[in-house]
Image (tube, rainbow, N blue to C red; front, side, top):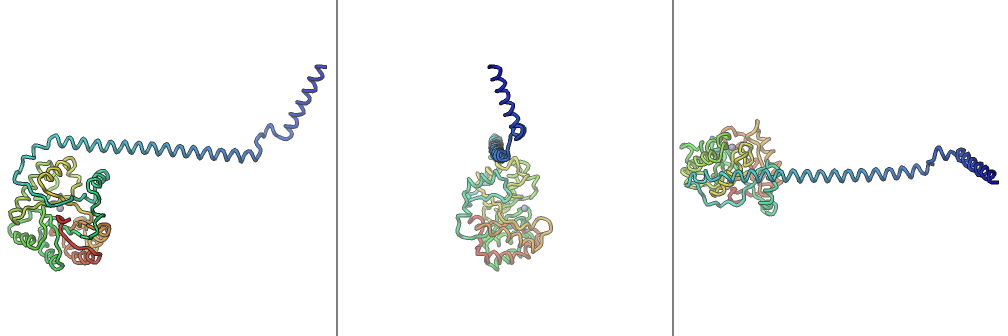
Length: 329
Ligand SMILES: [Zn+2]
């Protein structure tokens, strides 16, 4: 009896197996519908994996960014403390070179690096954007020269006041009257430098002050007015100043002087500027600002600047700007 049962069971099992074989269940266990479902699940899985990976990557990137920022800040802090550590030695220099500052806000240069630009934003919250008046500030670097007379005539014709950042070394006796005229006409005469020799003036804080003192005394003697505004040769973020920048800035601020960079550059001292290129360069960036400080040059090579000046002034006026000197900004 027992044997028969076992045989019967075996036969049934055999039949079941054969049936399955016949339908192909065993060797092809996945039917088509299953395949679709499975692949849908796979796709979902992959999607989630990709999402997770992207998340992780983003996390890592943020971490790296934070790290980098902290590093940059640390470097700045280090620079600061290193500079503060030995700032006393030049503070004793030139006790007669102090002014009562009337200027308000120094303006960051257009070529600031990102970190310093951020600092600038925090320090000077967007007065430019908040202002409703449109005022353009024409500034002329590297004068005086044989072009200066012509520049003054044009400014007079349009009744415009401008700012001149002078190379005091070029302010020779035969030009004293010209400089006095500038003051009489309401222009602001500021300091650019005495020598305009980047390597020399930016060699140390003392070297910078030495050059500035020569310029300061010359301009003060000639005009009878304390020059309180100035512009760093190359702008305040030039590479020659690296390492002494903060010291120089702090020292000049302590003495009451205010520096001005620019937002709009005529690019008239680079390459071979033409009337067209100068005009184009000024007008291309002008409209981005309500109070643009415009960089032009007044050295003997800048004939094209003089030639384009009227067109520049007319167009700026047509755009709805008035003109003033930087100390009024
Ligand atoms: Zn210059």
